[in-house]
Length: 114
Length: 138
View 1 (cartoon, rainbow over the protein chains, first blue to last red):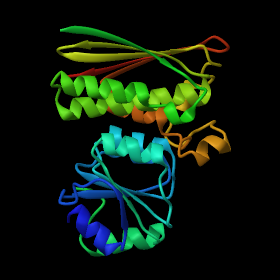
View 2 (cartoon, one colour):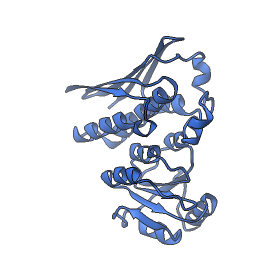
View 3 (cartoon, one colour):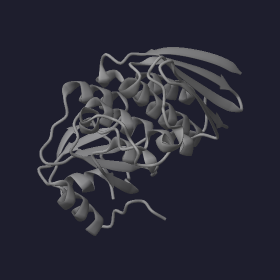
View 4 (cartoon, rainbow over the protein chains, first blue to last red):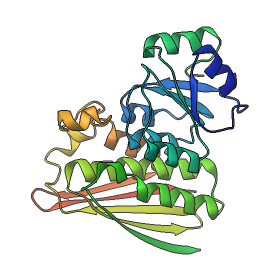
């Protein structure tokens, strides 16, 4: 699944980033950044309803390729600037967390567990 | 190779927490370290940085980069950790509701640091502060 596929499945807006062809291998859905930091996944996407700079920082430390903001949340300009600097794609969807995760899972994206 | 870096971690602005870890990550990448090593250092240092901002009013970070290891020392003059055994348990947290609303305080900070480092030393004294020495082997 690529980032473009995710945007399509979630009917999401691309806030920034142009590496939409990047392959995504796993996903994590959480508003608690420490929980996100506990489990490393390769080329992962983060789904979250939390909007602050630490969301971008967390994804940065984890080498995540994309962040999806659920429930119509939109990141601040400062967040967008840092994401651009780090080559991350930011998406925004009106869907709620459960629905967004469920849709991606049913399309074959897993939590990355072996 | 022996490179030493020093950062001041300010607690005034939560949005800036993680800047030092981000800078170290970029430096290690530039030096050609393996991605898994870089990620371990970045995550452990980031959790430590967040801890200093949340609990200790900020502090300083000293990073010692050698060919076979990266050592990060975080020093603060905060309240100290009263019960390290509890603090090392996943899910145990003394963080405020405000901190939780920011996405932290899940009680995963120190357990995560331990998970991503090869050696972790915590020196802490109540009312004096805490020094955390974390080593990641290459």
